[in-house]
Image (cartoon, rainbow, N blue to C red):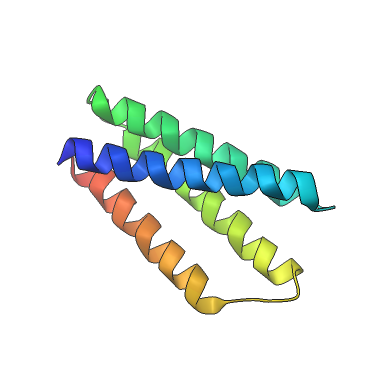
Length: 104
């Protein structure tokens, strides 16, 4: 179960970071991109800590997941289109990841 959580956390963080790189290249606003990039980096760090059974990895995961969700929400609010269902799915997936970090 630990490795499944690691893979999902890494994929989620890397996808968020890829979206960030695209946003940095195309968007005028870079503040939320930096926020999402930091969140992805923290989530990768938390996944690595989880592999080494560090007992406070969930704190780093909460900070990273929150930064990713906040940046995505702010991007949606600042843009022309806001897809609530996209943000709900992202939030639910982040919460499931964080529960996994807290329980393992």
